[in-house]
Length: 103
Image 1 (cartoon, rainbow, N blue to C red):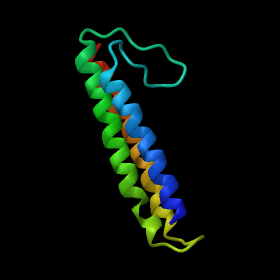
Image 2 (cartoon, rainbow, N blue to C red; image 1 turned 30 degrees about the vertical axis):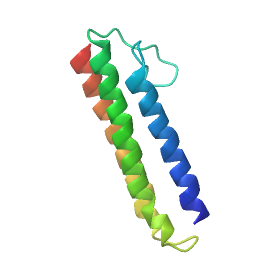
Image 3 (cartoon, rainbow, N blue to C red; image 1 turned 45 degrees about the vertical axis):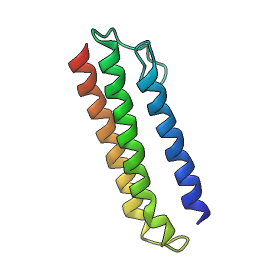
Image 4 (tube, one colour; image 1 turned 120 degrees about the horizontal axis):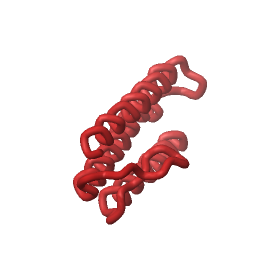
């Protein structure tokens, strides 16, 4: 139960990043340490990036749901870990498509 609570806290932080991106007046950066790209429509770009963070947080929460039912050190954690890796890679690919669209 504690593991799921921590997992949910992280998902709430990801939602906060999405809200911050959604409401920002300047183009938001995505990759750590990289300057935000030059964007033609900052408002739509930021909404796209914010929506991406929202979807990521929701998918992370869904991936973490098995933490409520699994025992500690269970083999059932493997699909959770693989799911997180897959959606993280998908998020990076989706961001590159967003950047390409609004650049």
